[in-house]
Image (cartoon, rainbow, N blue to C red; front, side, top):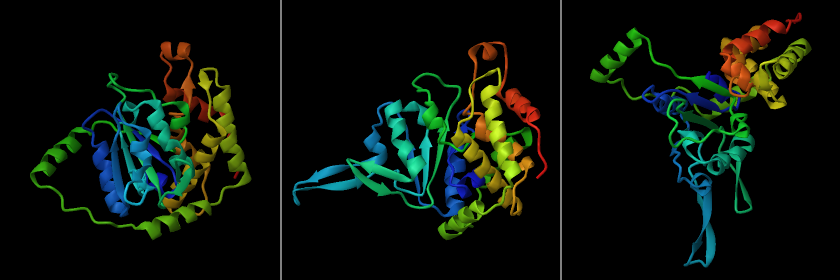
Length: 283
């Protein structure tokens, strides 16, 4: 899913308890993709200018010089994003949506490709700020990073005794940009576009949903479906692709009604009901 996000110009939110290698995943992925990698540790005292940069007065020249922030990279890890206040979180909105940053009235383009992978811990509550809906809506996927199975955990212990060799890049910037362009060319029939829209509209009408999928969510659902089809080796996407990416694309965008949540309703069950309720038309 992370690779699908990169080639569809999307961003990823990783959720998981501490110690599940979220940061390691991001660092290694950036190395394999050969992308310029920066990491920001989000804290309650982090300022928006610590993310985007600022202009500093140069006494020698008598003018202001631009000091770019860590957002100016190709692969940004926003570590523990929900530990920063909303004002600082919002510093990423323009970058994630427009691939540009405005610093004191000057708009600057970010390097391409540009991807943000953010982490957050759903368990720890102290010192945590809730991500606003506008911020969540910028992420193509929300992926849950859980504990490995027993065999996988044993393999981790053995890996500590014999560390793997340094990762080598297998992709590069030019290859990623070509794949992004290829994703845009993946074909989808009119019936499939109608299917995507019907799924989004069904989420807004579901009795257990307070806030349904936005039009942006429908666009992201189609983009993710195209990326999955391309990675599978096809030049067209199908309803199976749409259904396969439904949960990571929509789960963080939908809001369950409080009374439904209290009664034990789960988002995964609601999305399953939405998929079952929307008929698949012939492609």
